Every structure is written in structure tokens, then in C-alpha cells.
Image (cartoon, rainbow, N blue to C red; front, side, top):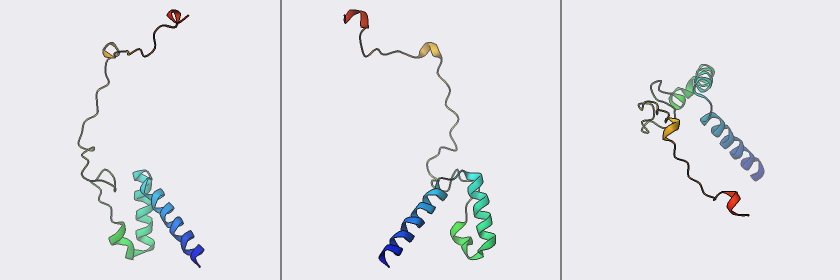
Length: 88
């Protein structure tokens, strides 16, 4: 009996992890399908459409603009090892 409970807990945790990391369109389709099949889950699975993801709403990543790529001339090369010709 304990083994069955442990297996159910591990399967539930795995299902939660997979659902948490699904891409947003797939997650929305799956949530809509589950809400149609089991109407009692409406309160639990209600996802807001304006949030970036269901996991965070305070990170502010959605509101930030894209980071500009740095120009190749501005990249500074740091050499860790000296030239191999001086080692011989």
C-alpha cells in the first residue's frame, strides 16, 4: 500500500512538473480541454491571459524591451593563457 502511495505521489509530481514547463500555447489548449471535460476544475486551472506565464507575475520580464546585441568591435578578449610559443 505504501508503494502505491509513493508511486502516485511521484507520478503526480512528474505530471505537475511537465505541465508547469509546457509551452504556453500547448498549456492553454490543454487547460481549455480539461475545463470542458471537468467543469469543477475551473477555479483551479483558471489562467489569466495577460500574464507571461502561470508561474510568475512579478518578474517584469514581459514589460522589458529586448536587449541590444553588442557590436563585435566592443567585445574585449581576455587571454587566460600566454601564447604557447613562449612555453616551449
